[in-house]
Image 1 (cartoon, rainbow over the protein chains, first blue to last red):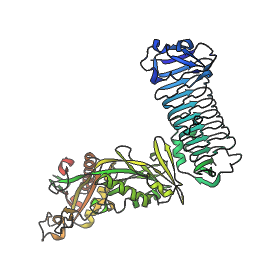
Image 2 (tube, rainbow over the protein chains, first blue to last red):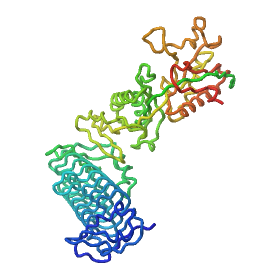
Image 3 (cartoon, chains in turn yellow, cyan):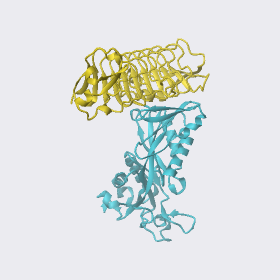
Image 4 (cartoon, chains in turn brown, blue):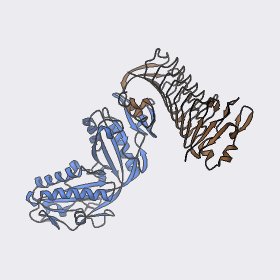
Length: 272
Length: 298
């Protein structure tokens, strides 16, 4: 069986909510039934066959192709199984509420990728927008499990209200990394912007590049060799990420505890 | 059945059901992994008085351990799940948490889950933190030498305790030498421990006692100094009897360990003063698992 492929045949005037196009909703459906699914676009509804040329039949293996995939929002929303691949950029809310499966995006994502994600794997080969792995505005539970790998850079407020899981950023991260974080791990190979860990309660920010300025509300706990780090990094070996290569080398870190203006049980670990 | 001059009695070892778990202890080097493991498995020879039977199963190379450090696998056996959980927690808290550079991981994923670091974490007094890695939960407990890393739970499975055989020899040194050879061979096998000191017990017991408060007492039929006082099982030339007790995860594991051990004893043979191999047979009073010596060696 070949992958069920949706190729954009128009350049959408409005953004399109493609959340119905996930394996668990397409399983057992005929091409005609899939073609008749209605997608929200602005204040209109568009049939799938008005937007995409559909080919292939393996609904557990879905692909999105086309020049304007950046107009597609909610790709992989609530995904529980199977795999979705996107060749190109995507809109906002990619992988929102994901509970399993894999979502692979070759380009960039807009804001709120992996928002309130619970499990599974989201890989972004390009850059991620703001609020990666965060909670929706007004909500208090951000990402609650799974793994997000960004091979490029990430925007501001990554992991806002994050509760569990890992976000691994191979490029740079913006301001307010891990704000209001409750638990989980965020790793950054490149630089981070201002105020990392702002109002963080628990959790770990693992930074490979020294901070230009340690936040005033984080206290220096000294340099340490931490036994859990090789174990943590070894856990990433099944994924396509440079963090997995660090398992044999990264052990020694400088530990900053904070945010001391709040609960103060979070940590920023800077690899030495 | 006679092998190399050693008579194999037509009898069986009688064993009973237990519950077991395995843990992995790692440390900066093997020396400190052993310190922790020896302490944790200390005073754990017989459930009669210790609450559990425990022993070191084998040494682990760094590539076999979760954190890539040298370590050992240890197993604990008890009569029930509750008792096992209590013994594990007490021993892990007193002997592994306290041991410098140590970390403690689950040694088996199968079976029911029992607490490993789940409650030990409270030693961190609120400064402990957890990490979920690969679907497992770990605890980082701040301690004075750094952090004590431990896994939340380990598995607990059904197992068998009390597999055994007796080595009957002309002298004490010869009986001990035969048992040492057996233990060396048996320690190479997985899924079994020999919980007594050095794997050997000289105070083999029978079920019951003339004293009502005792559930077990000396196996007088195999005590050489009582040959003229009791219904002895010993011929005149036997001056020393020692027992090897085996706890294992399955009947096959115990049978295999008994086979390997008895073969090592028989290799020394009567030329080295070993005359007989027998077993702790309690006439069905001890447990449902019977290990017939001759069948195992056939």
